[in-house]
Image 1 (cartoon, rainbow, N blue to C red):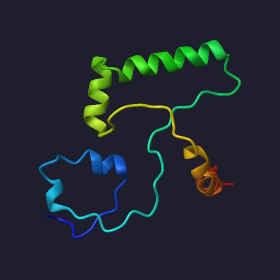
Image 2: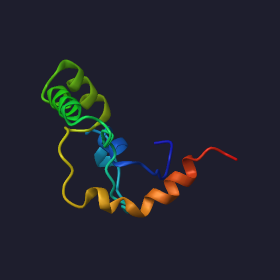
Image 3: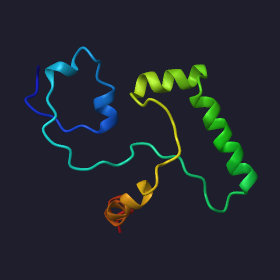
Image 4: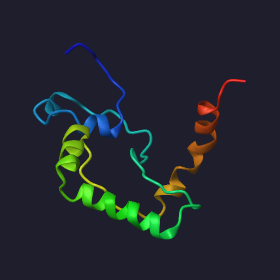
Amino acid sequence: GDAHAALLSGGEYRAIPEALKPQLQVLTTFAEVPGFIVLTSPRMAADDARAVKAQLQRFAAGSDEGKAFFGSTGFSGMREPAAGVMEAMDPFVDATRRALAPAS
């Protein structure tokens, strides 16, 4: 009740209690990008990358830590990215790199 409008990420919106969502109206969605991506380095050994993936799958499949993570973030699970998801973020890469670059 304190604000007339807000700008939220999808994760922030999903974390809002369901009882409050009827009081809100989404006016526009200006970009759809994944909110959470886990990548391994291409330099990582294939066996190690598979081990990381297996650990993440166990985490997401119902571990106590996974349940706490999903309960507090509004995320509902982990999955392989759909075709084209990574490429859809290409327009944001250069601007993000510039914003994160150390000041010179």
